Image (cartoon, rainbow, N blue to C red; front, side, top):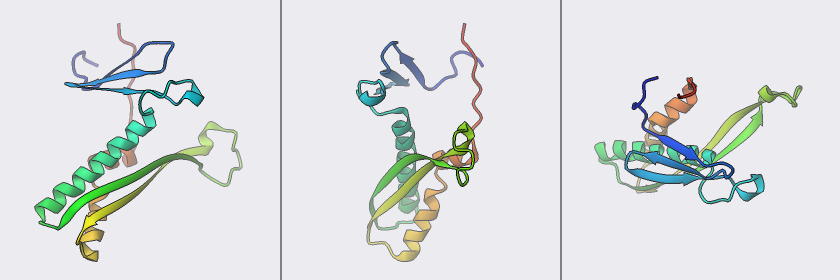
Length: 145
């Protein structure tokens, strides 16, 4: 990988779990809850992942509704992450026994008919973050000198 081509840089100062996230001109922080060793000074990494999906969902639906002049007034996206068993728990102790599952509920605000609501639900699944998460992601990792 070439240096200088990264859009997000994170920095964690051990022994705390609090992590500074720099994305261009924006800075935010992530942390873990106190019960797992963090200080709860920011959202957990999974909460940030869910936030990305929720934001992308809302933006994608809004752009489509605006282009089609639909009477959409707002969107609220409710998200939850869980790990669930792949099968009927025959080998529950194995790491591969659970998969990630994201629950997403979308509240559309506005005087929309059922055809418009169904179309916007379909559009939600076309948001780029949703497509990336559901297609599987390959991550290439190496140590930096």
